[in-house]
Length: 127
Length: 289
Image (cartoon, rainbow over all chains, first blue to last red; front, side, top):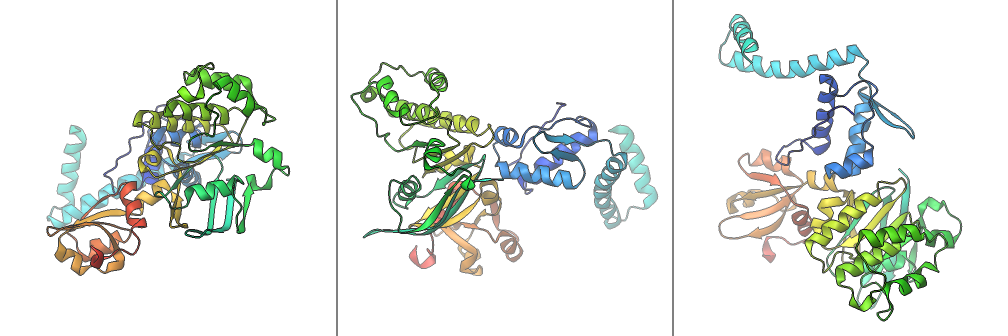
């Protein structure tokens, strides 16, 4: 299996299933998990992460509904990263969420769109 | 998800205690912790499940009625009871022969594998085993006849934390195989934090909650504030754990409402222990403190 790091925060307000789901999703989007790769079994994964098997079941169910994985009875759960449109859309949505915060902050501080563009150009180069 | 054990509306009346209309469901491949303080009814229910005590009413279904034969069901259940029920003057091998003869699917290789793993010596007398070794021996026996459901009554009571952790790891390993499930009673919440998938809480002979461990922790918060804060909250919002003239600590599942009402109140992740204490604390309110 490709590289999959899962770090669970006990101080986060986000429920466990959401934290785990987001990290698997981001591994798929970054290409750390490749199309067709087998994810750990639900039982094995939950024991390793010390979370309830029911939490991992929910994570896999939701990832399947969103189209990121596919489960096959008796075989396991596989990564679906072949759908370019879904990958692009998801990246876009993730960035839009952050941009909304950024734009809200800019407006509340009276920063113009042009100034925001300039700041973005500089930050993008620097980071 | 298949059901490994289904307890439906089981009641049992004693002179001073009643197991009151108890229902619970064990999901396959799960470790289910049966949590309750001493005297809550845990051992009574386990004895009823195992047929060691008669119930007054209710129904118990094993493995979704997959097996028709009572003998088969007996073979498929591994049992570890408090204090073992072993003969003290036998050695491990002699005691094993007694136990093995009662199971049709006894697997000597598995048993020998566990003996080695647990560093047990077959020639040792039962009476010379420490409490921890006795538990390991009981586990080796109960895991060596191809059981699909392991039922244990207070396996960790009186053991040090290292052996308790070892036991939890063994249970975690056991349920990795398809179709294996574990049900164990305890009054020690840290055992459950480490390995349970699902938690059933019993108090005064009644089941007061069954839910996934993560859900139980995530749907509750520890809330801390001043006595003035407390006055502004309605009683049903919160179960008080501790109250002094400086402030209070409690557990709440209505943390969103409380946050809205009192934006500056302290809300933290609650431990299973605090949630458990709050839930069995029952109707305790300010007047009792």
